[in-house]
Image (cartoon, rainbow, N blue to C red):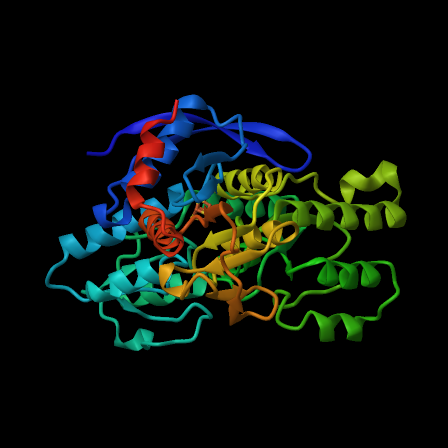
Length: 430
Ligand code: SF4
C-alpha cells in the first residue's frame, strides 16, 4: 500500500545548503531488488539523522574488512516511481504488447528483468531505433522512461493514438527542469543546457526547451570556453557553427542569441562543474556588459540538479574524508549520476566501477569500467594483501540494493570472512 510522507530534503551544492519540501511517496518495488542488509544500514542512518543533515560515512568493522558506506546511495524517487509503474504496466496488461521508449533507467539488471517480463525497447540508450514506431498500434502500451522523452516522439505516439499518459514515468525532477526552461524562455533568455548530448534526459530537455527559446548544450568546460571565446569575439561565426554542430537548436543565431542566457542542467551532472560553467559564463558577460548590467544578460539560476544527485554527491564528499584501501562504485556504466561518483572518488582512492558482482573475478582481478576511455578494463591487485582492508562502497541512483549486497558477499567470500559477521555487526550498531 502506498502512503505519502512529507519530507524535508536538504539540498547541498559546493557553496550552499538549501531546503526543499516535497511529498515523497513510498513505492512498491519488487522484493527481489531489496536487501535486508542494506535496508538495515539505511534504516540506522535514517534513525540517527532523519533530516539528512549529516553526510558523513558509516563504517562497519568486521574481522578482515571495514566497509565504509556512503550516507546516501541507491534508488532515488524517480527510479522507484518508474520501476513501480513499469511492473504495474506488466500486471495490468497481460494480453497487450508493452514497449519502453528506451532503457527505463540506466541499470542493466533492471532493464534485463523488464525484458524478461516481455517489455520491448523501441530505442537503445543512444536513440538508435530498435523497433520502428510504425509497427506500434493504438492498442499497445508504451512506457515513457524516468528521463522523459522528446516532443517529437510524444507527437509520433499521439498520432498513432497511443495513450502516453497512463505509463508516463518521467521523473518530476526532470519536469521541474523543463518548467525552469519555460520560465527562462518567457523572459527571452537563450537556454544553456549543461548536459551530456547523447543522454536520454538531455535529448528530452533539449526538445522541451527548444519550444521555449534557442538552446545550446555544453557538456563540459571545454565547450564552455569555446562558447566564451565566441562571445568575446575571439572566434568567428564559422568556427562557432563547426564546433557546436548538433549542439544548438534550429535557427540558432550566435550573434543575437547569446546576449541573454540562462543555465539549466541535466539533473545528474556534477554540481561543481555546473557551478564552474555558470561562473565562467557570468565572468564573460560581466567583461562584455559590465557588472551593473549583468542581470539583463545572465539569469541568476541555481543548478537544476535533483535531490538524489545532490545527496549522492554530498555523501561522496563524506567518503572522501575517510581513509580506505579502495573504493567500489556500483551501477550501470552509462549512468550519468554513477559516473560522477566515480569521478569524485578517483581523486583520492583506487576506484573500481562495476555493474554487479560478476565483474569481481578474484582477489586479484576485477573488470572495471574506465570512465575516461569508456571501456571495460581488467585490473589486477583488486583486494590488497593485508590483515584487514578498508573498502568504500557506494552505488548510483538506479542501482538496486540487492546488487550492492551481492558485491559485499563476494568480497567476504574472497577474503574468507563469514557472511554472518556482517549481520552480527549490523545488529550491534548502537
Ligand atoms: S536521478 Fe533525480 S532526476 Fe533522475 S530519476 Fe532519480 S530523482 Fe529523478
